[in-house]
Picture 1: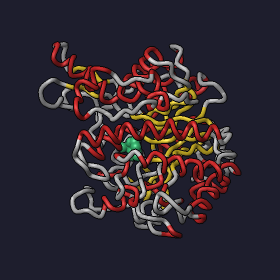
Picture 2 (picture 1 turned 90 degrees about the vertical axis):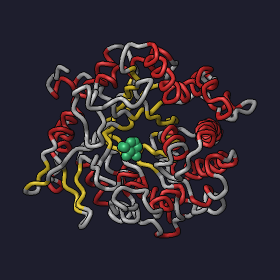
Picture 3 (picture 1 turned 180 degrees about the horizontal axis):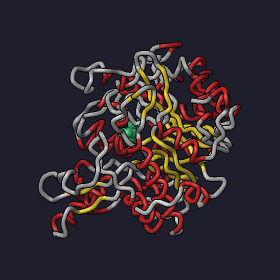
Length: 450
Ligand code: IFM
């Protein structure tokens, strides 16, 4: 991809474009049982033998619950105008029903007020996977009742913070919660049943629509939406079999979510493929799911290439890979955005996550993560290319602000633009963070210089 100068690239975005960094509660907060927090399904999952590559957990993570104030200073020092974070549901309501925990709500209030005081807009995600364990014990997302519990939680968050957050996303990556959590079982709660996974996907989308409606009735002025993990799905060859498989995989990853939310229908071919495992749709559900939203968040990392038989070898394209063995494929982001714009009546699109895990050698206090910097530059350029072709883009957020708990991979995979030394909790801005700050044109406050 032809790289234009940073200054030209930055100048090609509108002045009100949202530039941010993103995190999620379980991945950074730690304080797993502090101040009345209840256990989440990820606390339970981590405690099971063989679930997390390095046998770690989220008990301490980046100690963000304790280090909130310095972390807020660090976020502001990057010159971003937005910070995307999630609230831990069991921190604000230990059991996922019944009493809310004022100390938990106070934490998110300090976070939101601290951002605003520093000129950074708060972008709240309600559910980034850490469902209260007590709700899982009653069926979790496979139980329709959990949708009502989620609406109560959404309304409580709105009551406390709705007048100050810029945006509320209901769920982060329903596909991941459904498929990795309930079909392959490599994420919490670790189930392996496709029928359950499809119930989960349906209930996540239903609760999203229900929450949007309830929030609007409460007079919510924050922008409302959802965050999906999407990718272009390409056939490995031109064979009819590979193309048919790619169409089906696109159906399972993208159309299964985009069609109900933007067309009020499930894709017929995918429903037929799922047969008895198809989502349990009740009368009126699809209208609720298709409740209009103000923005759609997209998390983009790579493309997906599929073959009819067996796995596609990710090394075969010769493209560079990240430490997750994900191909670096920025043109896929442009392709995806153009396709969404062409095929669906989408609202403003936000890139709510984009970034990569790379080897980050710490040498004499510096981390020269040129790979990550290049990844970010080329993907920002890919967003620009989509905008130049008419896609309505509202913002871009780097995943992630800092190294954190990368789910089943534990702490070994580092996505941060800020390095975290987990032994001391010392934060060090990597070269990519220094580059991002310079790209954004932020002034370095003397007392906060890295
Ligand atoms: O760390 C995750 C994040 O929680 C959700 N999206 C993908 C990231 C990288 O795997």
